[in-house]
Image (cartoon, rainbow, N blue to C red):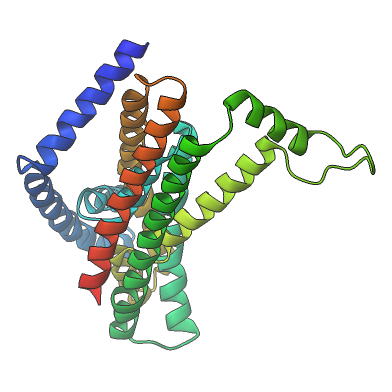
Length: 304
């Protein structure tokens, strides 16, 4: 099991090196851009077929929207960055991180629906105002929030590294924490703090809300355009369905990123034991937080 996990982590690392050292990322970006253009042209034809009532047009349109979401996610994006960085830096179960990836992608689609429907119905915005709100306001805000998530991971990793080097012996500190957080007070009979499991669960919920919110606040531009087109064609319901199909297509790739991040983390840490494992995990969190903060910060500055 350990050997297979190590080999899988090594394979993921080889792919990462090919992407960022040997120019593989440029080839992937070109392929993704070409795919998006082809799907957009096909979507225009699909919308006309749907408006004309052709059989099977809705299913074909949703399949195209799903494909567009996948190609869009293959390009430069903030969702992959924060999901990958979080999975690399934190001991998150794979299924939980995959679910978080899906939730963030669907929330991003929901944000596009809220922006377009709210802007058109409540604020009477034009197409230019809607796209400007998405690209000039919400996008920089999302990048800035993701940079803060990276900074938060960095600070937490530094704190854990410091504590691992200056803490009490493991058995003593563990015992005192257990007695404080799990037993009732002998005086009043009540607990005065959460259990370790409850604290971890609260931390996970806060993490999930922060990540989903940072990703979702920036709606997908393709979904915004689709919703605007379907609004003009009086088939907005199809645009809403298509936006969520795009979200599922995006989620497919972000789940792959989640699997890669968890695999790399496990393959990296499996060789460490005891206090060394704690320090290695803290160092990995520092590196992941630094990566997310720097890359998202650069995108934030370019978007201003």
